[in-house]
Image (tube, rainbow, N blue to C red; front, top):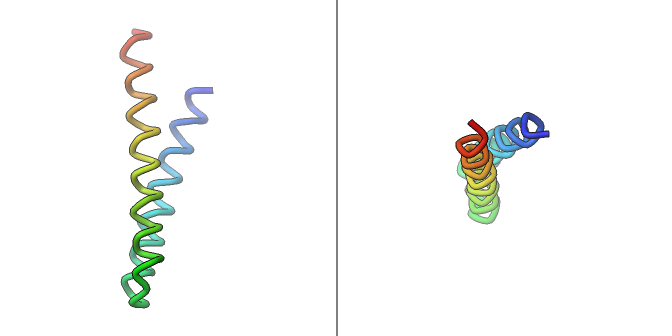
Amino acid sequence: MAGNQKSRARTEQAKGKAKEALGRALGNERMTAEGRAEQSKGDARQAKEKGKDAFRH
């Protein structure tokens, strides 16, 4: 399950980066902000999983 969560975090980060870049290219600040939020969500998920791994080993 942890592997699934890690890949989900990477997916959220990549999706957020793409959305942010597209928002900037289109001049759409809302889309840019949504992209940043998705990246943050992915970063938080990744940090949580790293914390779990630290206690497992």
